[in-house]
Length: 557
Image (cartoon, rainbow, N blue to C red; front, top):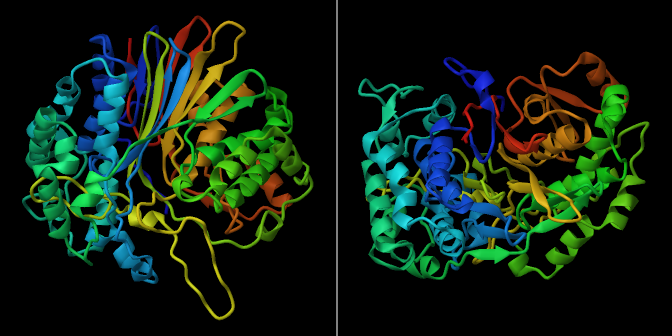
């Protein structure tokens, strides 16, 4: 579906700024300023990222909040160590996959679509390990906005208009976003979230354990089970047993000059790394972009198709010994060279050329990203999601939490007389679904010490992976500055269906050239995801770019 957000009152020139010491990017200027303020008070980049994301969970409630989960990449410049924090929502231990087969409503809307949220536990563990400022200070901006009110963004208005009218049962959500005259609220209207503010205050006082194994757990469970739709299998034990995973990041070298650090399985990080690993062998330069643009795009598309086929084999690594081996293969230079040799410069092929028929992976379009670089050179990239916009559409009467619909992120096996579609990403007790999000940090390789070159991530379902990859290529390989890299037209392919999506505005010569190579093209009038990016540029300055497709102004100092 194509979306065009209103740009009224938005100054796109302010979406790019340069700073001397630190910067924060996301799709909302208020949350960028929150993160900047935390850094000026001596907070760590993790403190700033959590404060920004908590605030984003209030104002961009269609995409993030305590009812969801996140992936975080953290790089400590002093120790030169990196961490991958997996705090994504998790299926209950009593979940029954057969119940959801053929029941799109149950997996997408209402209490049956909800997984155990990991967002708060992830913040708690990350702050304990990497934070500096008091827990209470991190929450202050989010509480103030939830209590006193905030303006609806153009993006939120669009999702209200597109999503909320689909259901009659989502009464509490409708109440939150409806004016006194019965019409839906629009950009600039004020929303207050008093129940959510109380929840945040309670967490400040009692900590995350109160959310996962305390009296608040009972309120959360009541909110879930009082919701509409089919019953939920989530129990108190599911909350009490939820654990944050702090794992090794996925890492690989980019053309000897840079090191990519991204999130591991079951995120989109391994797929991002695989695309870049295949294309590494071409040793792209600015000349390839200027003189051989059609061929360059063709090679990129072909690499994407191989990568998205491989994506269908990824699942929660805690439930399969094969996933680590698969990810190692995807980051292996020798294997990437073998795949590169399968790319034909003269034509594209049908989906079967890239791999046997597999079930496609569900999308996770309700996402929000924050990037932070601090004065010490440390950095965070964090992407949060409640899956679809407004998640399950269930809003807690007691807590004000908008709960995820992460069940929809799994694949449900269906058999027919003439085919058997299959995916590794199947639901099961305690599992975490495959995701497209891929928060990423890129380092400059040096004989003395590595420094952060880029921080980026995005929102927009499976398109996140390709948009992030293109932004990296535009900037590091094709000579564009970070402003141009984020603004440039994007392409998208997911292997099957065999259709290449292109943002309107790309030059006709390139489009026709791709058609001549056999690509079936669909022009997209809206945008292909959004990317938030930071880059260290000559003069030891920091360039920060918020994607003007969606809005937001970076902040820093």
